[in-house]
Image (cartoon, rainbow, N blue to C red; front, top):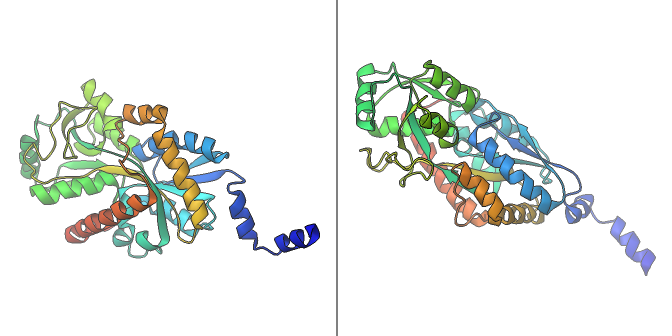
Length: 319
């Protein structure tokens, strides 16, 4: 009996055997943005508790550029075996619209396994800009007739799409200055080489506190815990404005369900850890009430619809 059982086991497909033992080696976590941006920070916070749960290290691999398509392509081409995953954000929802030649479809070629967190972005200007509130800032931009310089982490990034939504809703215009990552754009904002940004409160809040940049408003319908004195754009007169940065874990389509469930369980266990919650709270990230794969599928589907419609209507192209 023992010999027959052992022989039968050797006939099982190798992927099934590997799947039962998953994971047996380190897991590569592709972050399609530069080091130091909010998505990178969240990925690094989550890697530690997930590594403990899964029993193998999660290794961050920053593959920034081209509206997050470089990193996404790495994951799209990877074997669907759970050893290459991605922490993506808003830009992931519009890659195929921005870049028609991009060979993958966000809704078909990638499967979300967990929602991690979301946070408001901040509309911030260099102190030389003669505007101390959103109404004055919008008037200033209109007077500049498209010459105001907007620094962003890249075409199609969360920062760019959030600013494009403001442009559409407020009837303004500006010149987009794309950078490889948020830290580089912030450096030029503080130096006055770009006029404004709509980006992560994690990076901008300390600069607002010491007067190196001026915060005007946040992008979410409710005020930020990190910057409670700043109004929302909705409060400041841009009625109905709502944009959040968020992070989610994706795997390539075709990844077996047990592997997806293992990653989902590790993420949810990490998010339930009070220490992780404190670390996320310190950088202004709010976990979703339901971070499950099912909730991720529904939420991200709505985000694809929202942002793809904006990109098409605004005629945004990634090159």
